[in-house]
Image (cartoon, rainbow, N blue to C red; front, side, top):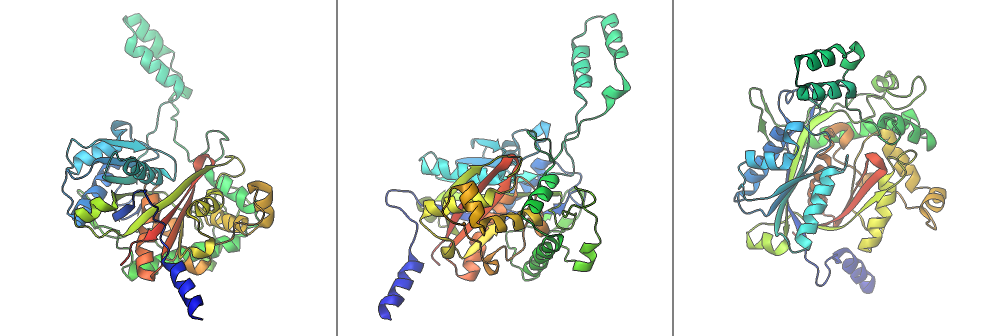
Length: 444
């Protein structure tokens, strides 16, 4: 009995630290409230939100403004005027102008890419302290003139004589004036993500009822977490010319009856994906401080968690667009030498309830594991009593570029609250890509 107890104890105490490999830690993570687009943030710009997150991080950590070596931000739909949003936000937040900054984009895992780029810089010995984050601003997206109109306008700019100018103006037709809108669609397949989610749900036999139940669970858990003060990464933000915001405004627990009344949003009339079981267009930003453990301790910080192994995966964007978690989870566990049962906290990005349920069914299928993943058996599913317990993207909101940092910070906070040792973040992204990361609790 004693030997058994000892084994159990050492198993739970095993750390993923490796000899000769730097320990990299999450010191702090913050985010602006995530708001439905078109609400209180409507008149801002993306760098305003990113700046607010950076200022929130500075306030929470009392970090000297020149103590960071590098700043990286993720964003998906870029404002043309601030294409390197990381740099503009950093300058606006008052960071030293000597700190280099760059912006990355990888659809819904853009801030995951920002964080792992930070980890890479620290592991390579380039930096000791990096701020990573992400922002998205869906209230105002760049809308372009049509290609024909753009060509005419550029030619007008170069035209020398009045005759040339008049002839170009005369060539403009009404059809040239129709604008080009950005779409949440795959460039390679021209299919919107909602359509893909609907097809994926159908392929795995996910019912409308299951999707509505999962969405209701997400909103109910988010409301409880919000009411219980667990979402401590959310900072208060005084929106210029508007109110002070201090909480997410998309959390709306409904009832199954209300949700059942909604019509399919994409595949009509028989689709199962609706506005209620999809994530909504969201404005928001996040920021995290990542350091080598020695630097964090030298500066007097108490880290929240260790950032351990991570992987990126990529599949066919037509039929496996949203299956990132199914492919990335076993890969990252293998790298870390862990099994599903070792993970205490799961945080998966919820793009659509149908996408989450399809992933859970794929992870639970021996056939899928053997046929598509070259495995002997199924991946295995996360137990629901460890899964997205404080809500997720369906309820908290999903600013594309900012969600990754929210997931990682939530894992760190949940590990502390629940006394767990290991957490796993997983997410799908446009382009058929995906990400997973293992996070280890920092000793209390």
